[in-house]
Length: 287
Ligand code: PDD
Image (cartoon, rainbow, N blue to C red; front, side, top):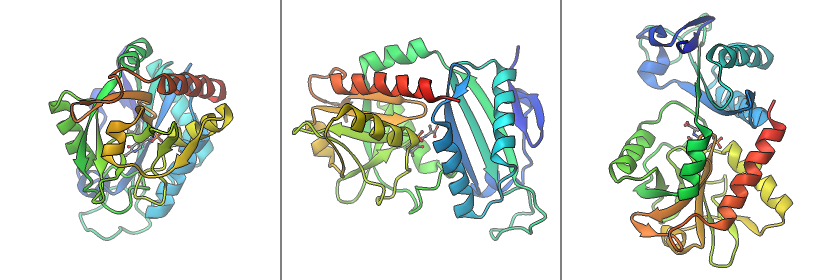
């Protein structure tokens, strides 16, 4: 059975799925997206991702293409048609198709909505987590509204490519003060020398990760010391543990930064415990 995509009201074979060349998402990155982890055929952290999607749309004044309820129904149908039990669902809304002009088109232009779903081999990602991953650091060079989840991901794509060429999994952006902002597609965390879990605060120019938010609840319940406080690359290199979070990575231990070992160069016990607790919680609350 081939993959099926949803494009503007129709389910179509993935290889034939297309939008118009004058879609504003294609020409101007005038579009937002969301990614949900799928666990047991259900949506993980569903509410948080829906709420952020609605916020991203509102910030850009893109009309929601349909109600949340209708969106959820289409998502479930996309998962069913692709037989995805474990994996990811991707959803993108652009401002629509209109003759190229930077300013917004008229209200008659309908937003475009596309969705794809893919299966992931959870055993393979568990094996990856058990080994840990390497990251590289790159200068922060993104626009000032990284809190909006837009498809304007060129700096993120270039950073990820740099990571791949260095044999690393993720790139961490570092601001002009030497502080880590976040990963190219994840939020960054450390367990510092004092045993305090730290991640960048959301006053900074970062995406308010939904996995990050849920993990904060998990950490509070586990009674672990935690602060929303910036850390430098040097602090990360000297930390007891480092990890990144996201709908794709879940909680992924980092064992090297720019080729330098973190701790003894193996996944830390706190990161591995948080990974287990996060996944348990996400499976229990998935809808
Ligand atoms: N990325 N920061 C950035 C820049 C991201 O792109 C993502 C998610 C995150 C983590 O957010 P969340 O926990 O809500 O997934 C942080 C998705 C998975 C992606 O681009 O594929």
